[in-house]
Length: 293
Length: 236
Image (cartoon, rainbow over all chains, first blue to last red; front, side, top):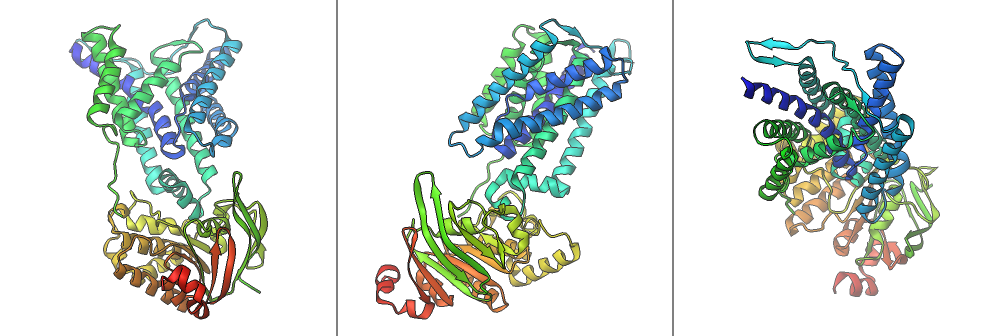
């Protein structure tokens, strides 16, 4: 029974990684850049919820809504100000370093406004823990997180494959120039991708801080890096890959905390990544199309 | 009035001037060939006309509208389609999805369905393979797909960049037959080709490019018999 409980907690943690990883993987797929500031958008989103719900005593749904809006605008603004002017840059390192700069910028803005002290984030999940049998309890946060992740995956998959804007994203991710020749507005499509990724980051932030209720300016950084690992693990650029990569990563992390060592769990997670990349460099679901000439 | 009028076009890549002031016109219904060696600037011209790169000087007027500064994605719905060099079909998408992508700017579903039927009737092979990922098609089939995709936007002019590149001789003939048939149906064609002989055989007029400038221009038939052209581009 203990195993089952660790497993469910792992899946729940993994679901948060998966939601964050979606942002990484979609932005990478379309703009071919690693947005290392993505984790810090999560932190900003969590602070927004904290302000609205804990400080202003407004309802939780309003807090989440405002947080999603703020993060969406933040993501689109970051892209327009920091990344778009560099799109023609000769080296992709330029954008990467800019993204790291944006990450530190956001952390320090939060540090200035909220200080370094840990804020106690009160869970936004109204659901009580569910007891299954004698020894297995599943927290409300776990249930909500897993369900939210599944809904997001389904909606996102439908959006990408069935809507015009989604198909434009597919086209841009494959060939920006050819997409433009189809009449697709490439800049708008990239903005939309940042908007979606950042909105998801807000949701991930709320879920993460509900399960692990301490909020600091660095809250987003480690989950951000792990979600990046999850995205690479699943095959960066692939939406189902982010989902599977996130869940597996969460399970590995939680089981190694439980059975091996909580200090070593991160090391184990990164070791697994290295092994996967050695055996299958494109990640679990990363595709490598054979080209015919 | 010419359908497409390019005047005093200059294009720079950083410090290097790739196109050094060229003028050309394309009239409605014509097939115009731009021929020249590698690096003469043929592809750059097409990219500039369809808005993928901005010129440093000069103007491009399409059907009476100055499109010199119009963003590329807006030019498609004005009636200009571009079949890029190397085909650039969306490899992971199916043949059908690629064709639908070609109709991205069109909103009338019924009209798009009609155009799709038309494209399938002209390229039966695409209909046979409509659910196959485009990346699994042969080079010639991908060229057909790229052309079908361009037709899906219902263009009045098609820019074609090296349609024969990398194809077997049988496919080269087939592709040129298709271009000719398309022009006979009333579509205007601006064709860039290294295979000068083939290009001149279907073109009405042609421009010969040499390092960013137009060296010669005129009637395609007379260029085919021009001694300089014969020696430099036709290998005779």
